[in-house]
Length: 177
Image 1 (cartoon, helix red, strand yellow):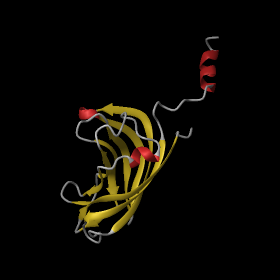
Image 2: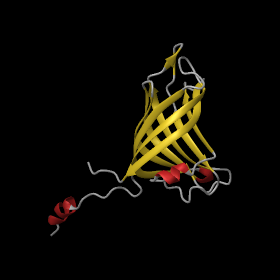
Image 3: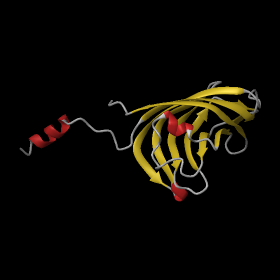
């Protein structure tokens, strides 16, 4: 029986880590601070696809970092590795959902590369998020109405910023691959 145990365990399908999910987000940004050919008032579109690992890191003031893998892109050809989704729940100031990308490439102005981070941050009134879990349905993201911001930083020196004017979400349990 001892030699059969590893074989039997191998036949049991692997369960997804607790809280793991795959999501696709499409968004529109109205630029408020531009650079180069990206000007204030311009509308840009983007998307993010991520798969959470089920691993989280707690932080101060109700922050939870949900480790993820994926990509965030912004027209015209700007892309970065999406590595975390951050939620804040139970903070007396505001709740939030934020998508964070790093290693951004595809945009340089006057020799200054905009290399990250690239973020979308949605803020809601305290109590909007009932738990630190990432909402997996559109109403959870739509409830974040206090402010909806986008930013792309150029190594800390400058940034492109804007208001997220539209955002759609589709999530599913992760595929087994």
